[in-house]
Image 1 (cartoon, rainbow, N blue to C red):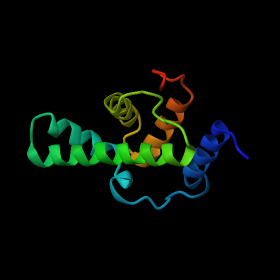
Image 2 (image 1 turned 135 degrees about the vertical axis):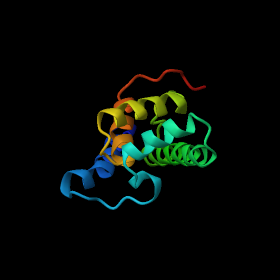
Image 3 (image 1 turned 120 degrees about the vertical axis):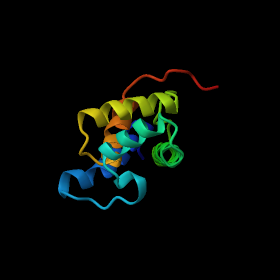
Length: 124
């Protein structure tokens, strides 16, 4: 019924819909944290603080799971071959521009942008 691109846009629309219709959508877990918390974790983890390094791993795992879930729902690689470390760098950049946003909101916008790029590498 839907081709892959239409399915992907439908998934993004459904993921972003709560941000359009209500001020505070229900987001659970690390995705509900604010960008400023993510940036502070990155700063402190860079100094080697063990608890911050553990939080950094949780953010990375959440982002990997979020992207995987979108890929499964859309039937295509939402990262388009971009390594997870590159996505995390872009998430840091977005968070610096909008520290009050929830991680889930920043990640949704980021992945929507990546999905419009041509793939970095072809799959066999």
